[in-house]
Amino acid sequence: MIPRWRSGVPAVYSHQQLYAVPGPEATKNTRCYNPPEMPDPVFPTDLDRLRAMARKYTAAWCSQDPAKVAAFFSPNGSLRINNGEPAVGRDAITGVARAFMADFPDMQVEMDDLVAQDGRTIYRWCLTGTNTGPGGRGNRVRFHGFEEWRIDAEGFIAESLGHFDASDYRRQLERGAHSLRVLDEADVRARLRMPELIDAMERALVEFSAGRVLQPVRTVLEYGAARSIFGLMPSFVPSLPALGAKLVTVCAGNQEHGLGTHQATIVMLDPATGVPQAIVDGRYITEARTAAVSAVSVRHLAREDVRVLGILGSGVQARSHLEALRLVREFREVRVWSPTPGHLRQFAEETGARPMEDAEAVVRGADVVVTATPSPTPVVQSAWVGDGTHVIAVGSCLPNRRELDPDLVARARLVVDSRAAALREAGDVLMGIAEGRWIPEHIAAELGELPARRDNREITVFKSLGLAVEDIFAAHLVLTGSSVA
Image (tube, rainbow, N blue to C red):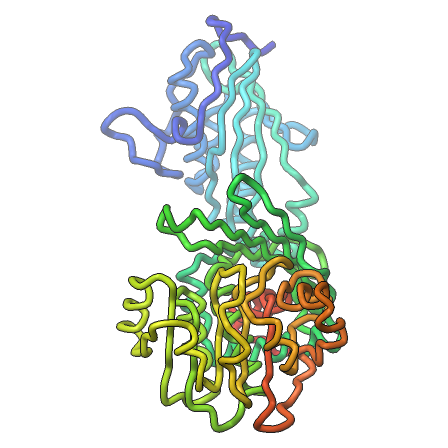
């Protein structure tokens, strides 16, 4: 019978408490340290000693000395694992510990938790090691388990009932432990290069428009008093192969907290098993891949002899577009305007762009125009846009907002990243249809169809909404260094 605590109050210890070893001889936050040859006696009513004993027991499993494990058991104590035959006595328990230590010479054991409640003592652990012992496959394993202890009157373990997931253990022996990669923005920036990303986005768009990608139009939820946006964007790309989803938020109030308005996380999964493979910061991927897609549009739709780039906006998209578009065309002049004078001045100083007094001054005479603004109403008028101009609208993906004068869209050759998405999300397209200005067939092509400019007088408009396939290609490039489909 497992004795009950005299206080009658259950004691649950946190991971931090369990590793906070009192006394000057203790080592801080140490998984394994050398225990004494024999454990100090522990009594069920002495919680501090029980905690100390559990730490030393954990260290004994790390010591590669199986006798140190057996020393925590009473002379006739028993250890049973997964309802198998019990090992009775210290010699038998030494044999069990020796077998584990032989299989995993680098074995490390961590104490996950210790719970003493209702007369039961539950010791939870995590074992990590490489199966390089006799007959081992050399795979690294990491698995969790627990032991239920009965403590005898002298403070030793009289009985331990151990449990762990045997099927998962066998799977790890065969294949190795699953390791979830986590990459923050710094990791992404270090791995993502714009020239390679532009090529990857072109391949992504071609795969999408050829019907070789499975993905729905993004699900968008508006929430809260500020009407923030939460979007879910899953995609499966068989040719890579890659499976994943981006979770993206747009919160206008973030600027008050020194944060970007757009935040995103990309979850990548094993296409065969659905097991999570990586969590990748998506904020910079969203920023960079949007500009890279626009560069693809310039590559195919802008004139070869363009000289003037005009940018409306001075945020992260303005900066990333300046970087990306310079890689596909040589611009002699870059003009910029922003409704926020401080941002405009800083952008011009840092990039060498020419600050203009208003949007019209940016657009008139420009060969390529980028609108990267949160404006709900048009920031570019048709009368400002000359023949042969290529216009890129990236600022909105909501059906009730538009950045472009509908007269401009009506007179231009309209290209989108996705017809299905444009007819659900693009205010620059949908509002004109609702007003009877054009029909859905006014969309001339998807960018992934690689449409070419027909002549040097043609005005082209690329309405970019952003597609999940772009995020998955970009994340795959970050993780593998390749986007070859």
